[in-house]
Each structure stands twice: as C-alpha cells, then as structure tokens.
Image 1: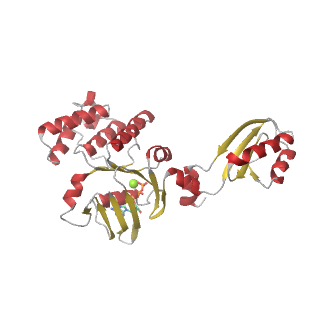
Image 2 (image 1 turned 30 degrees about the horizontal axis):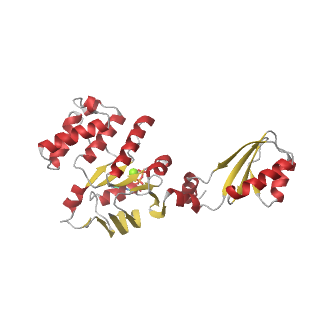
Image 3 (image 1 turned 135 degrees about the horizontal axis):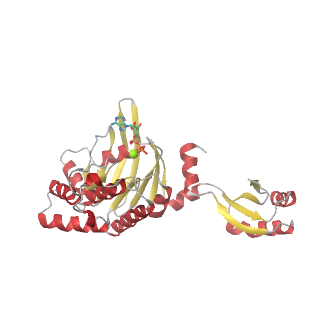
Length: 305
Ligand SMILES: Nc1ncnc2c1ncn2[C@@H]1O[C@H](COP(=O)(O)OP(=O)(O)OP(=O)(O)O)[C@@H](O)[C@H]1O
Ligand SMILES: [Mg+2]
C-alpha cells in the first residue's frame, strides 16, 4: 500500500530523511520510531503530499506522491494526524468535523453518520456542541483523530497520536487503532512509546535520518544477540558467583542478593545454572529474564549503548 524507494528530503544543507526504502502492506500497522529530529514527521508529510520530496520516489496505492495529477487522489485516500492539531477553536467539536467533512465533499447524510460514529467511538459525543478551544489537550487530540478519519481514509498517518493523552485515553486510542486495523486500513504510526509500538504494530522501523532497521517487534528483540537472566537469592556469596563463572557464563550486576547472568537461551540453560547455584549453597527466591527488550534494541541501535 505504501512503497518508498530512496526517499530523501533535504532542507537546505540539512538532510532530514536519507534514502528511505520501505514497504507497508495493506491492513498493516506500521510503527516508526526514532529520536527527536530523526525525520519521522518529515517522512509522513512527504507521503501525505504536504511537503515535496527532494529525491527518490514513493507511492500510495497506485499513486505517485510527486505526480501532480495523483496528489488530490492521495489526499482523499489518506487521513493525517499531525503534530499541530489544527482545529478551529471557536467551532464546536461537531462543527469542526462538519467543516472537514465538507472539505472532503462528503454529502450531508454521510457527514452526519461519520461525525456521530466517530464522536461516540472516541467518547466525545457528550461534548459535541462544546467549542473545541475549551477542550483539554487530550480531548483535542481525540477530536483531531476523528478529523483525520472523517472521510473514511484507507491509509492513516498518525504522528504520535497518544502524545497528550492520559493512560486511559491512550488505551482508548490504541484500541481504536486496532479496530481500524480490523477494517483493513493501513496505519502508519509515529511513536516514541515502546509499549505502543510493541502492543499494536505488526512491524516497526527505526529511523535515524536513514532507516536503521525494520522488522516485527519479535524479530527486533531477537536481533540482539544474547539474553540476560536475573537470579534473586536470599543471600549472595562468592562461591555462588564462581560456580556460575566456572560454567563459562559472564556475570554482571552482582548485589548482596542478586546476580545478572548473560546467556543465550534461558529456556535451555536455566536449569543447569540454577542447580549449580543451589549446589553452591544458594537459596533461590526468584528468576526473571531482564533486558533484551525492544527498548534495549532501540537504545543500542540509536544511541550505540
Ligand atoms: N520545514 C522545515 N525546515 C527546515 N528544517 C526542517 C523542517 N522540518 C523539519 N526540519 C528538520 O528535519 C529534521 C527532521 O525533523 P522531523 O520533524 O521530521 O523529525 P521527527 O523524527 O518527527 O522528530 P520528533 O520526534 O521530535 O517529532 C530536523 O533536523 C528538523 O529540524
Ligand atoms: Mg515528529
């Protein structure tokens, strides 16, 4: 549904997005993560035809972003939630959506249906006659999401949709994104939130001007070689540490009652390690896997940690 090839954007001397090649399937929830200034918003703005690319190419469905005749078709096909919410403060929630519905040339009946459907879904129906300017940040964000969906777009670009939301509202929005996925919509989601990426994205790309990596959350997690297990004990002593080291394992973070062991496959290696610890007199309280999360992968790739 979305294809880019060496997509590049330069602002004067600054390269904001450098040779990004990716493919997003129809019905996929695709996550984009990267540090501030990585080019996430710029990529989305290029794909939604809001800013011209410098080089490379990209298509949305059968349409090419740089083709003037295709651009209106792309705009009709995509919904966009940007960093700037872009609501009319004086207009009510309902009238804001009605305005955008007219902009997309939706008929009166269709507008009514869509507005009621979206406002109810996002729990704003009670506030439909209230001026958007008086809304809280989170309510504005929800209204902006409704606005992005007013014309029933097949492709949705969400640039940090839960950035201003409280945990409960974030959950509503994430649930809502998954509902949209069921409707076979393609969702391109910029997020800083690991949890969000992990819970709802089929695949995640990490961008740092260039594409650093791309894969399912599971694939990315596995890409970090090595895993870690934390063994908590009633009391740690040197004999326990040397019994683990003798087996050839590296240990780190030794405290008075815990040790973190580097290993490859905890499922296979844990039993022997735990037996050795017990033989050395250790009384095991708890065993947990630590690290090797998507966050570790992200930090390692982005910050070189
Ligand atoms: N209109 C513009 N003019 C000049 N430079 C720009 C413009 N828009 C973006 N940039 C630059 O492009 C780079 C990428 O910015 P972008 O907003 O795409 O990053 P981002 O990944 O969305 O970051 P964030 O996580 O902070 O939202 C930055 O260096 C930014 O300063
Ligand atoms: Mg951004």
